[in-house]
Image (cartoon, rainbow, N blue to C red; front, side, top):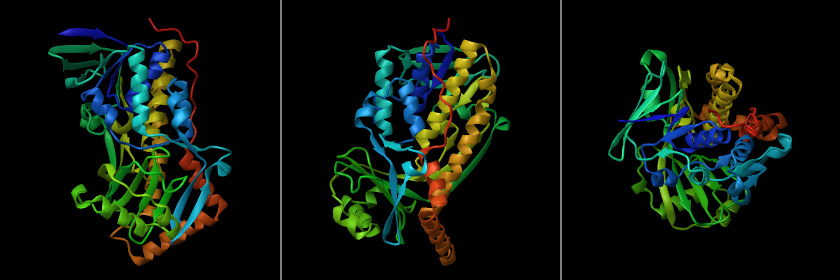
Length: 404
């Protein structure tokens, strides 16, 4: 067995793991990444595409914002379509100039992977039989890689390996508590090389169910429909998808909609999930390994980024200042932000979707609530503040020397 010694072992090379690795590299902290999938698989996954301003700032801090600056689409507002009429929520004017940026998670992942490859940092892709052990005392990660057994001896393990990963599953059941809500519908998503129907996202509340008109660029669009969990992708031809989307849109948007051949189509179930705590000895959970939100509030990738901001700051404090304060406060700080994002995502999902179990009274109440939000500056401000992202501190990494 080959023994590798490092400061931090990162399990998972999604955006959370890669971003943590890049920030640790900037801070001169030795680390490795272990990933069970291939690099090609990781780079090809289709995911979210809305970045909060604080996430954009964090990517700039990590030095991987060059493509984001040139290809990202800044948005200062969103539109909500209800009762056949569109209402614009001016995010920037309601939040002192803040905005969101449309830039696909796939592109974020590729940018981080390229930066890691350029810096020649150690990554083990297609690692098999990954196990994390002794994280309450002397952390170790063992795995099989290219015909050889490896053991990583480290100070800390960062569990960035997603909902089905090994890290959370390795925690003793009496040490962890989980909270979950499963929604009775899914999102049918279509990616197509057609221009977006509008310059900003359109969230649709309709009698036929929720819809979302989004984009990845000025020539590539991403559209979603609320569908029953019993539906299958094979049930939805491109023609059927476009026709149903048109039925949920207003006449103006319907007229502007450009249809085309889908290049990706999938149905994603919706759930809310939180793990408490997010630290177990020297093991830290981050991103989807610790929490999942329904995509309605555009918080999944952004929550992962804030976890990494807290964790990287904590590790920098530990190695450069000899302080354990950030490490000790990691779980509490993350969970405060996680639960606020969970609340907002649950609220947006509840407000904009049709539930089979809701009565006509319930539906009328939701319409009244949405009407209030869209006609009240206070209501719109609450929505805007949460949508652009609640603030957190990003500590500078400049002038830090490598840790011996």
